[in-house]
Length: 195
Image (tube, rainbow, N blue to C red):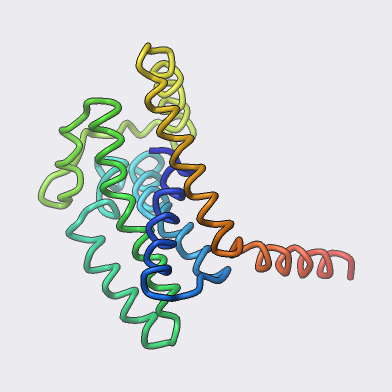
């Protein structure tokens, strides 16, 4: 699954959780869910593709044996420091990554064997070549373009449009959390540069 798809899935889950629990999502929660949805790939892919430390780009951070205890610890630490919403946003984003990858690999690419990867260190997915981060990324982008040439690819395109549109609509309904934080950051950078 591509980063924007993971971000959409995670944001939908966090937005629905916030609505059910009566919590308000602020910029920090939006940033936390965005980071959480990308976290497994930010850990596993460089460690496998660039450094050869992990056997696969779907290994340690994708493992349910790692992600669940880690997410519980994040929520507990966040609760202790009065940032429960941020901790839950990160953890839901992180935990959404695994079933999203399973669905994407299985349903769209017929790769059901990937399920082994989510049980690291007991097992792992197919070995990744250590061709480097950009070479591996280019490989997956090319594979995606080839997939889009198939007659049934419209199902994936429709799914992606619905997914991204739903996330965007929920984000707007939540008051576009994160925009104000981004504006403050840009303003701070401008002031720092112009001094």
